[in-house]
Length: 172
Length: 172
DNA sequence: GCATGTAGTGAGCTACACTCACTATCAGGC
DNA sequence: GCCTGATAGTGAGTGTAGCTCACTACATGC
Image (tube, rainbow over the protein chains, first blue to last red):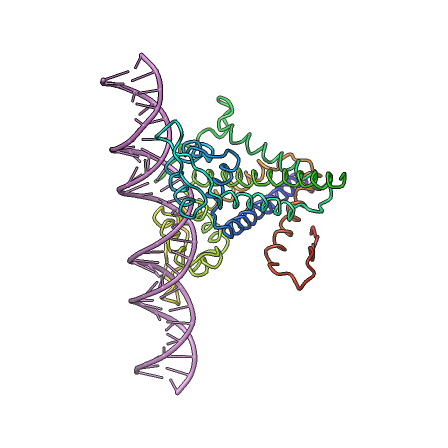
């Protein structure tokens, strides 16, 4: 009985922690979305800007791969960024099929703003935080990421262990 | 000069921590999206299910408020949930303008599945984690949330103090 | 020099958010 | 009782972000 109580107490603590995490996810997302909107960007378009800032002029195909998105989607994102003057499509020097998505001056400027904004955000979250708490948070984030990745990579761990195999139940 | 070095070292640590957090946000979002898709739901529709599970049959107007979304958007979400058999629109007993969005049997069942799934997710993230690390993570999440909320609520803090006005450090 | 593959886009779909305009209904005031 | 104003929901239209499929233009290999 008391053993059972302990187990469910732990489960409650885990659920509470998850709720906090989910709330944090929502709030972080909101904050970033609003901040990006101030610069005339959406999340996806900012993602393109980010990749472009790291790699310099990039083929749409390569952008698609970097963003884990279909080439067609990149066409749309680049259309948007070009329409608002952040990037241009330049001809590829050796491959006439390809275009190199390239920052305009405004684009470069905005990319810098994004970097600065992210540093400010890091400051907002962590400035003045005691070292031990920061260490523990970083370690915790790392552990959570490891667990999630282990789970994602491992859809079917082994053979015949009888666990939850493949719930091929579909209803539609 | 050495002081400056320390400052930028701290800033680097903060940026690294932010990168970890952002990665965590992405991975958590992905995991939940995929998990919901297995139940035939999207994030927004699952949000509706969640509110319905908490409140029972609910007016679309109330759903709109609970989800912080326009009434028109709720119409679309409920259309989707009704088309896939999770909910029905029942007449409101006293107000003929309103409809009560109500679970079908399948909806109730799926809502239970969602709750179970969330508990499993909490387990995946936190099961077997040492107490001190869990404590520290929970406290850290709380602090980050507090900081973000203080920032959101405070677009213009006061008059002319210029600096960082009220660090409102709390960890409940 | 011809077959095959690759880069990008048009067309068309789902989903989620918004606004504006409209219908149906409710609730008051007189 | 009836008219007026607020409220519940939806149709129409827009923007963003994904997807697939089919197609053009070009590159490359044999």
